[in-house]
Length: 159
Image 1 (tube, rainbow, N blue to C red):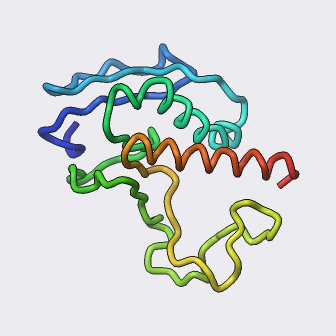
Image 2 (cartoon, one colour; image 1 turned 60 degrees about the horizontal axis):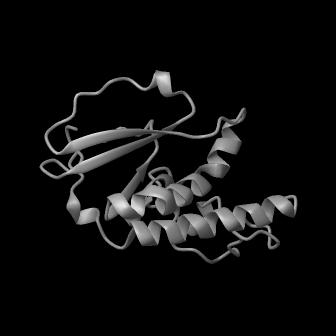
Image 3 (tube, rainbow, N blue to C red; image 1 turned 180 degrees about the vertical axis):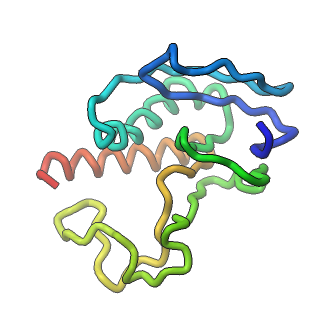
């Protein structure tokens, strides 16, 4: 509320499997919050793997008819400075701060050729953070659907 899209209409969507744990938050004018119940998973790895599927599904079921842009942010992210409408492009990602300024040799890309996420040594220019991305709802749906499908192929192949 302090730094994110100040002065603009914002609809926050919180995905959770613990509805009662979501605190009441005082929002500014033109802002609203919807808590969306999602399936519970025992392991954080499963939650992480299914995140793209959840976003894609909600794009189709709800977001396409409610908003023009989505900004997908992990719940534990802290926004410490201005984030405004200048980020609202068809599709955007955020460079991972732990690898910012590093050479591509330092990036922890998937190096197994049988993986859908494979990036060969000597290739790849950037390393993105999975916890802050977005764009138009249509493009976010396309991205998250493709990521989910690739993860399911890898899982089926034991990767």
